[in-house]
Length: 171
Image (cartoon, rainbow, N blue to C red; front, side):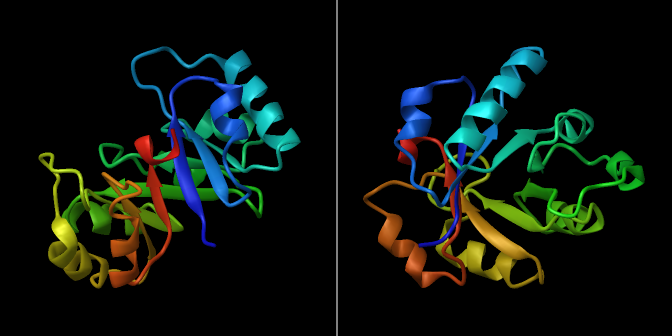
Protein backbone atom coordinates (compact mmCIF):
# COMPACT_ATOMS: atom_id res chain seq x y z
CA UNK A 1 0.00 0.00 0.00
CA UNK A 2 1.16 3.54 -0.70
CA UNK A 3 1.11 6.71 1.30
CA UNK A 4 -2.13 8.52 2.01
CA UNK A 5 -2.42 12.04 3.40
CA UNK A 6 -5.32 12.90 5.69
CA UNK A 7 -6.20 16.58 6.23
CA UNK A 8 -7.64 17.26 9.67
CA UNK A 9 -8.80 20.52 11.24
CA UNK A 10 -9.36 19.28 14.80
CA UNK A 11 -7.81 16.79 17.20
CA UNK A 12 -10.04 13.71 17.17
CA UNK A 13 -8.20 10.65 18.51
CA UNK A 14 -10.92 8.26 17.29
CA UNK A 15 -10.54 9.26 13.64
CA UNK A 16 -6.73 9.26 13.78
CA UNK A 17 -6.77 5.86 15.53
CA UNK A 18 -8.72 4.31 12.64
CA UNK A 19 -6.05 5.19 10.06
CA UNK A 20 -3.54 2.63 8.88
CA UNK A 21 0.24 2.94 9.19
CA UNK A 22 0.55 4.40 5.68
CA UNK A 23 -1.52 7.48 6.52
CA UNK A 24 0.23 10.80 7.19
CA UNK A 25 -1.73 13.38 9.18
CA UNK A 26 -1.75 17.02 8.00
CA UNK A 27 -3.23 19.59 10.37
CA UNK A 28 -4.89 22.31 8.29
CA UNK A 29 -7.15 24.88 9.91
CA UNK A 30 -7.20 28.32 8.31
CA UNK A 31 -10.17 29.63 10.30
CA UNK A 32 -8.46 29.60 13.72
CA UNK A 33 -5.25 31.07 15.07
CA UNK A 34 -2.60 28.34 15.33
CA UNK A 35 -2.59 26.81 18.82
CA UNK A 36 0.96 25.61 19.58
CA UNK A 37 -0.21 23.48 22.50
CA UNK A 38 -2.73 21.68 20.27
CA UNK A 39 -0.04 21.08 17.62
CA UNK A 40 2.27 19.61 20.28
CA UNK A 41 -0.51 17.31 21.56
CA UNK A 42 -1.20 16.17 17.99
CA UNK A 43 2.51 15.57 17.41
CA UNK A 44 2.80 13.46 20.57
CA UNK A 45 -0.33 11.47 19.74
CA UNK A 46 0.89 10.82 16.18
CA UNK A 47 4.30 9.72 17.48
CA UNK A 48 2.64 7.24 19.87
CA UNK A 49 0.61 5.88 16.93
CA UNK A 50 3.71 5.78 14.70
CA UNK A 51 2.25 8.29 12.24
CA UNK A 52 4.05 11.13 10.51
CA UNK A 53 2.61 14.58 11.22
CA UNK A 54 2.72 17.71 9.05
CA UNK A 55 1.50 21.25 9.64
CA UNK A 56 -0.10 23.30 6.91
CA UNK A 57 1.21 26.70 5.89
CA UNK A 58 3.51 27.41 8.86
CA UNK A 59 7.01 26.15 8.16
CA UNK A 60 8.59 28.17 10.98
CA UNK A 61 6.35 26.51 13.59
CA UNK A 62 6.75 23.06 12.00
CA UNK A 63 10.54 23.38 12.29
CA UNK A 64 10.39 24.84 15.83
CA UNK A 65 8.15 21.98 17.07
CA UNK A 66 10.19 19.28 15.33
CA UNK A 67 7.38 18.05 13.08
CA UNK A 68 7.93 15.70 10.15
CA UNK A 69 7.16 18.32 7.56
CA UNK A 70 5.05 21.15 6.24
CA UNK A 71 2.32 21.41 3.61
CA UNK A 72 2.37 24.56 1.47
CA UNK A 73 -1.09 25.21 -0.01
CA UNK A 74 -1.42 26.53 -3.55
CA UNK A 75 -2.02 30.09 -2.31
CA UNK A 76 1.35 30.08 -0.49
CA UNK A 77 3.78 31.50 -3.02
CA UNK A 78 6.46 32.53 -0.51
CA UNK A 79 10.12 31.55 -0.78
CA UNK A 80 11.07 32.58 2.78
CA UNK A 81 11.49 28.94 3.82
CA UNK A 82 14.49 28.64 1.50
CA UNK A 83 16.55 30.47 4.14
CA UNK A 84 15.78 27.93 6.90
CA UNK A 85 17.99 25.03 7.84
CA UNK A 86 15.96 21.84 7.70
CA UNK A 87 16.56 18.51 9.38
CA UNK A 88 17.37 15.68 7.00
CA UNK A 89 13.98 13.94 7.27
CA UNK A 90 11.91 17.17 7.21
CA UNK A 91 9.69 17.13 4.13
CA UNK A 92 8.07 20.01 2.26
CA UNK A 93 4.97 19.17 0.24
CA UNK A 94 2.55 21.50 -1.53
CA UNK A 95 -0.52 21.73 -3.70
CA UNK A 96 -1.16 23.12 -7.16
CA UNK A 97 -4.13 23.41 -9.51
CA UNK A 98 -2.48 24.44 -12.78
CA UNK A 99 0.86 24.63 -14.57
CA UNK A 100 1.79 28.06 -13.13
CA UNK A 101 1.28 26.78 -9.56
CA UNK A 102 3.21 23.57 -10.35
CA UNK A 103 6.19 25.69 -11.45
CA UNK A 104 5.97 27.77 -8.25
CA UNK A 105 5.96 24.58 -6.14
CA UNK A 106 9.02 23.34 -8.04
CA UNK A 107 10.81 26.64 -7.29
CA UNK A 108 9.76 26.28 -3.64
CA UNK A 109 11.61 22.93 -3.72
CA UNK A 110 8.69 20.83 -2.53
CA UNK A 111 9.27 17.06 -2.44
CA UNK A 112 5.78 16.24 -3.71
CA UNK A 113 3.00 18.17 -5.44
CA UNK A 114 -0.63 17.56 -4.52
CA UNK A 115 -2.50 18.10 -7.77
CA UNK A 116 -6.21 18.90 -7.52
CA UNK A 117 -8.95 18.48 -8.05
CA UNK A 118 -9.18 15.06 -9.65
CA UNK A 119 -12.77 14.07 -8.85
CA UNK A 120 -14.31 16.90 -6.82
CA UNK A 121 -16.18 19.13 -9.27
CA UNK A 122 -15.18 22.51 -7.89
CA UNK A 123 -13.53 25.55 -9.52
CA UNK A 124 -10.23 23.60 -9.63
CA UNK A 125 -11.71 20.46 -11.21
CA UNK A 126 -9.27 18.75 -13.59
CA UNK A 127 -10.71 15.33 -14.36
CA UNK A 128 -8.51 12.37 -15.30
CA UNK A 129 -7.24 13.58 -18.70
CA UNK A 130 -6.20 17.09 -17.63
CA UNK A 131 -4.75 15.60 -14.41
CA UNK A 132 -2.57 13.20 -16.44
CA UNK A 133 -1.47 15.99 -18.77
CA UNK A 134 -0.46 18.32 -15.91
CA UNK A 135 1.25 15.56 -13.91
CA UNK A 136 3.46 14.79 -16.91
CA UNK A 137 4.72 18.40 -16.94
CA UNK A 138 6.80 17.97 -13.76
CA UNK A 139 9.42 15.54 -12.53
CA UNK A 140 8.14 15.91 -8.95
CA UNK A 141 6.17 13.07 -7.39
CA UNK A 142 2.44 13.75 -7.74
CA UNK A 143 -0.17 13.11 -5.05
CA UNK A 144 -3.84 12.95 -6.08
CA UNK A 145 -6.13 15.39 -4.27
CA UNK A 146 -9.82 16.12 -4.46
CA UNK A 147 -12.94 14.02 -4.13
CA UNK A 148 -11.37 10.61 -3.43
CA UNK A 149 -14.00 8.12 -2.23
CA UNK A 150 -14.45 4.37 -1.95
CA UNK A 151 -16.47 4.55 -5.19
CA UNK A 152 -13.70 6.08 -7.32
CA UNK A 153 -10.55 4.80 -5.56
CA UNK A 154 -10.06 2.12 -8.24
CA UNK A 155 -9.80 4.82 -10.94
CA UNK A 156 -6.53 5.95 -9.34
CA UNK A 157 -4.88 2.92 -10.96
CA UNK A 158 -5.31 4.70 -14.32
CA UNK A 159 -2.82 7.34 -13.21
CA UNK A 160 0.96 7.30 -12.71
CA UNK A 161 0.63 7.67 -8.94
CA UNK A 162 -1.11 5.77 -6.23
CA UNK A 163 -0.57 8.29 -3.42
CA UNK A 164 -3.58 10.40 -2.57
CA UNK A 165 -4.83 12.97 -0.08
CA UNK A 166 -8.20 13.96 1.21
CA UNK A 167 -10.66 14.38 4.03
CA UNK A 168 -13.95 12.56 3.47
CA UNK A 169 -12.32 9.29 2.32
CA UNK A 170 -10.82 8.84 5.80
CA UNK A 171 -13.88 9.64 7.91
